[in-house]
Length: 205
Ligand SMILES: *[C@@H]1O[C@H](CO)[C@@H](O)[C@H](O)[C@H]1NC(C)=O
Ligand SMILES: [Cu+2]
Ligand SMILES: [Zn+2]
Image 1 (cartoon, protein in one colour):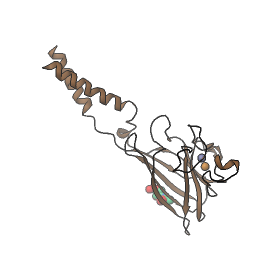
Image 2 (cartoon, helix red, strand yellow):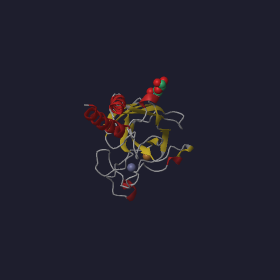
Image 3 (tube, protein in one colour):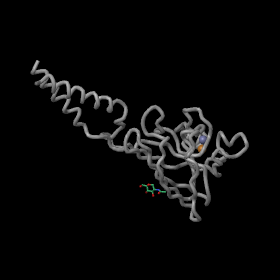
Image 4 (cartoon, rainbow, N blue to C red):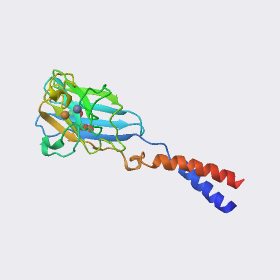
């Protein structure tokens, strides 16, 4: 019995010693435009924390432009084949701050007089892990301003009337292999390891 307890103790200690989660990182590089260039990076410090979004785009007509995550990372037909706003919860279109919004609703980005967008913020609705992860979906920059669901016409609560799609990019993994998606299962194994560790401590005395 003592022999097994010792082995279990060592196993438990090893699993419990697995380092804490590293931030999950993703990137979308805008394409499908002759003039617009842009990098959008996403970083989530842990499985449940808000996702930090950093947006750098150039070559954009000055002013506000709808900026969303669309459901498909399919650029086979250009930005047109990325589908609708990412909306797994089947809610209506809204502003990023709204309780009721599409998961993909990131509102607008504003280009300055030089056509540059440079902004960053945290969003607690989009996630880089789990069932509703945005990995593999697409970022889309629109021609017009997103009305954030505030207009009276029917499309306002569907698309925000943001107009044509001027550039888009697929959201891909940007983490190192050893940092990859520790959220699914890792947490359970880790908490279970403490139970084993504790049990083996009791058995070994
Ligand atoms: C996107 O990232 C690449 C690589 O870091 C960089 O060379 C390029 O200038 C960036 N594009 C924009 C628009 O910031
Ligand atoms: Cu859109
Ligand atoms: Zn929407």
